[in-house]
Length: 322
Length: 286
Image (cartoon, rainbow over all chains, first blue to last red; front, side, top):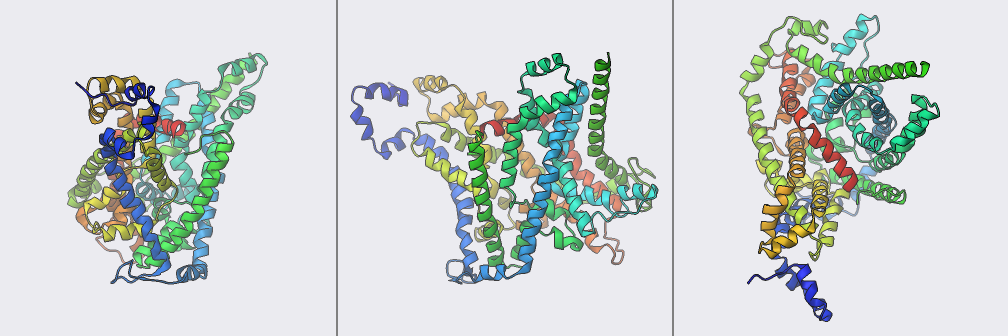
């Protein structure tokens, strides 16, 4: 005889005596779903060790870290680390740089995939459409190390772009060495890397637009641009709104690879951002407390922005990321 | 008639603009490829554009002759395979267990996991943890800290949730336990989803660079990305100082970049559809 242990079988029995099921303790469920709980051991152990274990280490930001006695023996320093970073102009500089570079990504990087998606959607030649999509998605799959390498080759003083500019009689542009030019380079390289990939969600939203709307517009004699403006764009408006709010939620978050692989010593005033600053101060110079405090400051601001943006997304009827 | 003509004009202009975008996507590759096949002199004299000048494969001979580069490639391929298998297994376990609605405590475990998507210790506490666990300069440091992505787990979990419940009930009646149900019934039905998640992990591991930079100083454990970063940047920091024979020439740098790019370009066209499905599942279900 097999013991049938599923909820289904259980519920049939309990319809006779419903009081019984409420008395089942956790041990009963542990026994019934033992294998399921066993499956959860490794994932939960991973999350607790590597995610919450790391959060436990945040206390270093509030302590005078003593390398020899270890973290728990170090003494609390009464927010001295935070007083130190808030008194440091370099801290505000990297926060400003982070906001400026992310802000530029929002202004330049955000509309690019929308425009590209509309153009791809309008393509009448199917084969060409498919091939160009494949090529446009490709940069997304390259690491920033490789993109950084390509960019330094391409935009160096002797690189192809500058050699074309000088051949046409222009002056070479210091793409990588002039601070302002570097900010532009950072931004445009981001567009190059992600605009194609970013079209996917918009294209998916466009396939959901009712074809009859376009046919009705044809009957009314609307041109292609009119149809884009009055049908396509409103059709993807919810997608645009949600992605915009999500990106706003990440305004203080910045990945490490992209600024790090594009940086060089000459542009650090504009190019040093929170992640790379934490790396240089915290790991390279072994100033663990300072690095952790700056990181914590960023994490908290990020959390506030993310929760807020998620809340707004839900209000707008999106599902958010929860 | 004029409407038809205008349509045609519009079609061709849209195609033309997309063609320019495609061209902009490709030109950097063509330039680096051409530079890698050109002479150093031609590169420095700015003669190279999108085709090689003084065609030669000397730079590739150096790259392939340098054991370090091939070693890093080999090491990274092994690392990617092991990581993808382990990460996928852990993700499957968590996703399946948390997709069973009858399991007590799943909401709390879910909350504990999702919270880590919003808040993390940060770079330094991560680094200290790896140091305290004595994982610095071990291959484990490249696998364990990113063993599971909660985001990928959620994608897979919603996939499992959408499989018909009757399958599970029938298997129970046949005397299967939960592990047998997962292995014999659920996983064979989820092959496309599993492939997508495995590929997401594999590409992540292939491209991920910062953990190797933070945790690894032993050259035997250099991933291909860290190796490339060093080859590309050593010369930049020294540029302007005296010319040293150890500094990679421009062609050599270009060849190294291509060495790191070509593997992903070779597999990418075949994997593309999985990634597109991955991102759309993630957006609608996440």
